[in-house]
Picture 1 (cartoon, rainbow, N blue to C red):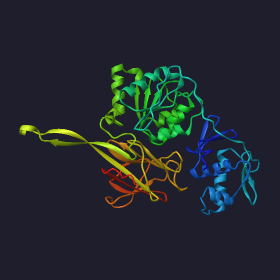
Picture 2: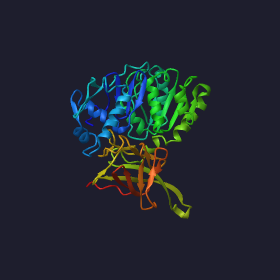
Picture 3: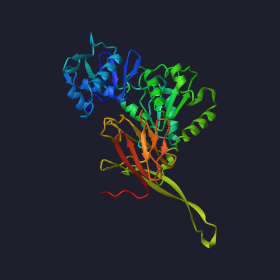
Picture 4: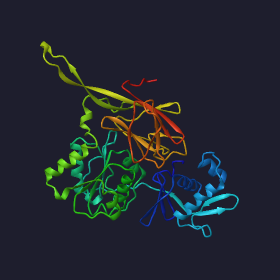
Length: 409
């Protein structure tokens, strides 16, 4: 994909989000298979011009020869999703013996610049460290601003979009932030559940199995779909709790996913450390003078995670989330058409590096300490062993965890 349309485009009546694999129009969202979406993007990048079967083979299947039936099936699925017809096309025209042509207007999406919120919002903190993704409705800014400030005062890193108005466009950057976050915190009010963007983001977080907390600021009836999908997730009824009880409940809830950021600030390495690393407290004893009993002292052990892919070594931000996939937004871009756009991620949870698969096809893990390849799926993340290999489709990523800082070479 060229990148020009990677963040989305308008196709006739439809809004297309390639990174999310969605088409949206008239309040309805439809999902496309990754390969079918790639075919649509290929057509959109050549809008108005014929796209031959050879071009599809080169740009979609990267030179791998596929049968005519494979391409025909993708076109058929696209027409169904777009409510299009081969006999009277409004989107995709068949050019006999040549290929296909996209005949609808295509325009890249323009990012929405939100208006000033009712209350002065604090500046979003950049998610270099583990962070909470906060979602709320624009009209609830007066209630949510104090919540954001309180979370920050408790040492939690927070990322949020500055109060996008209900019904306005949300970008793929938001989706990437949801994927990278440690927990999705949804402030529930009648306004937020009436917002298409709030619901889109909440449903996306639930779809990728992101830890999800719904904080009900007011009595609110959830839409049936969201109620069903979030029924097993944690909910905090702010409007039914005393202030002290609410604060304690929210604090403990957030801490159950990670320690607040203040626990990393004293004595740890700089954010500029050019590797995926995490701090682990290790206890040791030191002798006291005059033969007194030794007292425990705390030292800082820094672990480094090194990734090797196609002969190159990759590094990422301290205590961050390292994403891997075909999308140019990923920390590590994998050069295979068989890999999902955001296929998986490595994150720091509870003093360990854990791998979470975000794809439909899974990731295979092998290691000297394992009896064979282990399949990791969206339903199950896993702590990474000291060394091993992640196999994503036909790509191999070697990793090792060590307390030795990488050399500068």
